[in-house]
Length: 167
Image (cartoon, rainbow, N blue to C red; front, side):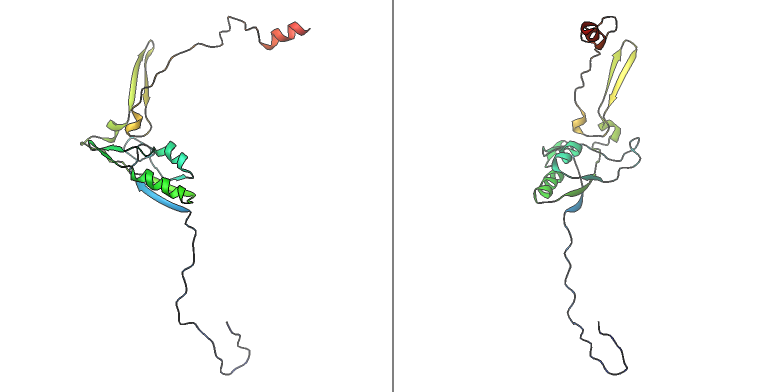
């Protein structure tokens, strides 16, 4: 930009071309779509589910599931969001914000798609419930009560025994 130090006629050169588009980093993006499981907002569920920041495909698989086809409305569908996430990270992407979409099928409520298990015990019952709706919440949970550290029996390797042997 020229400086105008005295009155007179000055020539200022102005480009008639439009400015070129500046490059911006493409290592951050956001996806929304259907996944096998993961955070999603529903009635009687979490009050908010902001898109989650994912920084690797391994983390995506842990939170939202992998590439296996999805079972939707009685048929199978390709897990497009999982394939897109894998391609994003394979091509140098670093930060991915993911928002899961879930629609119950067959006129059921979302709570009908949340896996739960109730087991009778000697003191009543114990109940397990999946945190998010989805097919992979339907797994067998095998639990056993194991009593440990019975204080009626003194273990031979406790610090008091070791000190007694060396004094």
